[in-house]
Image 1 (cartoon, rainbow, N blue to C red):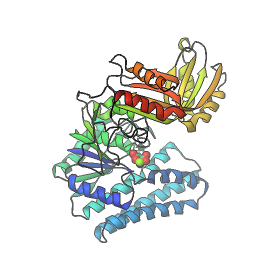
Image 2: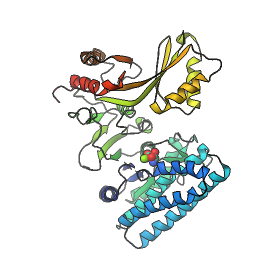
Image 3: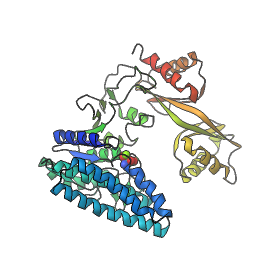
Image 4: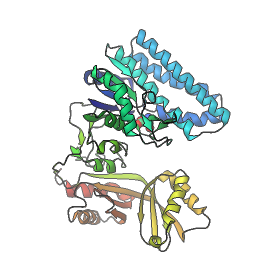
Length: 457
Ligand code: ASP
Ligand code: MG
């Protein structure tokens, strides 16, 4: 049995959705299909909260917009008849519930993490229902199961939940195994589960990948297939390096490192539930479903190159906290990072020395982060500074820490092009080396390192 995950970017536009339906019809029998919301819908739901909060009148237009978007897809994928009627009835029921939630928000004048999670889960509910009806209208044996009704149990942390795998496995074996053995196609919305006290909890933005991994682990699937609109992992961004190659196989750790960079093929936590059970992940292109794509595997494999990918991230800024004796002062790191986290800022990475802690943040967060630390009383540091025009190169591969000279080759390649390295991090991860350089040098640096390790490609 396979678990197949279909992302929001593949579920956008009538043609793509029809293609996906053909693919499921062809390959879905006896498998579980975990789906995202249609492209853009989760953003709409979340932005709608802000509008509903300040203006009651906005609510009916948000609901109207969601209705139109789904009806448009339904008209193109479900012929008039029983299944179409069933979908519109279900959709109206869901939208009715959603509308009441928005009114509740407007009435209480506050958005809570709990409310945000419930509201943002509606995109997946609507898309799963629609795909189910569309597949049924083709005469297929399909059923839809909602994760909160069949016990995808979470730890209850809103916006960033973790699944309880053993409880979920027990529930799923009971509810899903009989359907699978009958050869049914089971469609399930990703992105959320339910806490033991009955609250809807999401796995964070992009969390359908993680959901699908939880389902695969809970069911002991033979593989998790992630269907995407890209061919798989690449050895560099082809926009920077036209000779970039498809990566055929990579390890869990390499995939987890690469999930933080530009291509963002998988949610960073996707490998977590699968690791222990050694379930592989195949990243496959919906445009070319027979192509092998990239395989993320627990089994050792022989690599053709010393490194797998030269990835990059241009959404980086550094917040530097200068303080003496960082290593000798208990609690300073916790205090400063705790303050950032409490201000809702995601810390991408931290690099420290005895005199400075450097936080890598997303650019949009840098001013807010700076202010939050400015406001700390008493100040636990001597000086704060921010650096904005930087970018990060991530060199990821199995041999990074094991083989001598890899870091030296990266440094030399960059130096040969007269690019200065502002900062680096080497050692914390077995499989990654980070270099921070000026933003203007990014393409040049990625190219230089890529040609070093993939000569003549
Ligand atoms: N629909 C959710 C999001 O856009 C989850 C996902 O697509 O993975 O973040
Ligand atoms: Mg999405």
